[in-house]
Image (cartoon, rainbow, N blue to C red; front, side, top):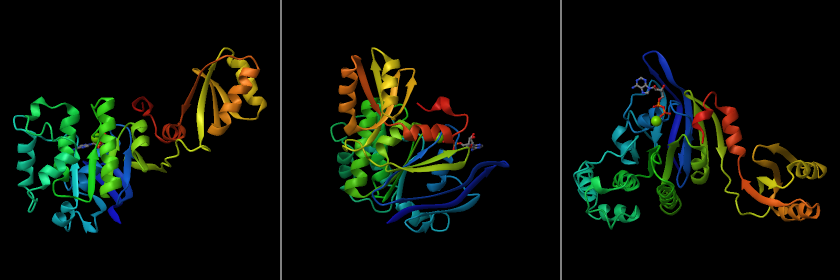
Length: 306
Ligand SMILES: Nc1ncnc2c1ncn2[C@@H]1O[C@H](COP(=O)(O)OP(=O)(O)O)[C@@H](O)[C@H]1O
Ligand SMILES: [Mg+2]
């Protein structure tokens, strides 16, 4: 089921075009990434989805309800965090959730305990927010966004400032919500690597233009998958020659010799190098097709891609 539909969305602020016609959809159980460098227009788009910003041109519907014409119906189906979760630091997590639940018409009494357990905050929910880590604040923020059981969750750069463990926990939580509860997730980020691990699909935006869309096939760990490998050996020049002789897609790089190859072929290649008396110090596997696409698609924003 289609949860979010954006059609030809434009935003002009003081005669400046911030968004130039964004169109996308998010369906049940899907995690869709909204990737772009700082200033691309991610927050602007998300604010418009949540009814926090007026629409210059175009249309946004949430579960079929127009966010302008049927604002309340639309908002009942969406929960979100823009920039940072807005929590009262001197209150406990639970008190924050109680306060927010009073803003919705009918949040069931069990809803708080349910969302708290969903985001794995049951142990700490009665502590004051000022004692929470940023990751915990994000989790309470997501709990807050889920209180009214929306079908669509919209998160604006929720991993900003999180450490790698916090990012993994957030990723696992979002995957669980989408795959088990069927929630549709629309999540923005300027970090490609994060989006690749989390999303089913990535929409790339730059300067208010949609410049690409990629379906992420969760291919890893399938025998026939093609990866980009980097070989670090005692003789990189001969390694490159050896690869070229096999008519493979290879090249010399700063950190070794790179080779694009089916995973199942790699053991034979390693044996071949050993037979050539080349010592292998390391073979790294990376998947970087999307990153290359992203860099070639976006303009002047390479420094923000990590
Ligand atoms: N309220 C505003 N007034 C004027 N310009 C704005 C406003 N909000 C955002 N912008 C501009 O719109 C562009 C997109 O911003 P934003 O949506 O915050 O990007 P992102 O979230 O992708 O980093 C930026 O150039 C920003 O300066
Ligand atoms: Mg932003």
